[in-house]
Image (cartoon, rainbow, N blue to C red; front, side, top):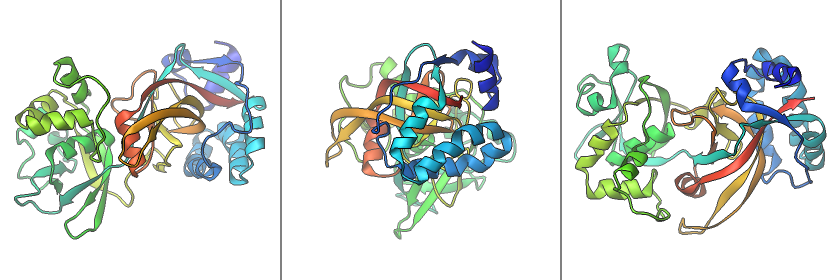
Length: 345
């Protein structure tokens, strides 16, 4: 890596040797006036969410990269924005190979503030003692039961697991009111993907997932619906457990509320938090029934505004929001693409 590249990385606060090894300077991609596939106000919103914090911690990056792009996005000036990306930015490719793009969303599930015959599956607050280190198997076995740590009760056991994967959600209460919840950290234990454990044991059928209007992996949901006793067994093999709290708005990252299509979760050892990123991959085309009917280019500017226990290495998780399209994308999107962290020249 060149000295210039090293200094550019230092500006965005990424000084570890691992992170430096993951970004390499390349020639800028050729741009057209269609360089971004989303309306620009959403880009302006995402930049404005993080700009105060980045201005305090990384003022050179805020002034040289975020502020110029923000001006063009707020003015809805696509031509100048695309020109600035190509001619005013240094492009740092993420990794030596392609990036795995996945998607996540904010699910809505049924729940209640009190337990009854329907709402039986708890979402837990963070304990203030050693219980915050209990493994998933210990908690599923009742280690936190009876301590008054239940934040809300859900109607479906798999919905609890789905919220743990997404890290946030909206609980629809019996009276129709919405109760948003967000992550309050985790137990510090390593993460294992439950769906991958099922695949390794050949429990899930091959082929694309069926259309589903419920959160989580549709194949895994169907398997656990048919084999309910296996849910605690497989979930217990993932020691990582997430705690929750009530929030004003679900779907929050390192800089507050996430912006659909613009906020991405990254591995901070590969991509500096708060950095502006140009991505090129594919996104699904979804019909009214929620079925994937094809794929189309996803080419846009995003921002590193979140992390996740399962987001490691050459992977980016794109936040798609709360609607039906976001749910379908979260269930189906596993595609290869390219990503470049943008620096000022």
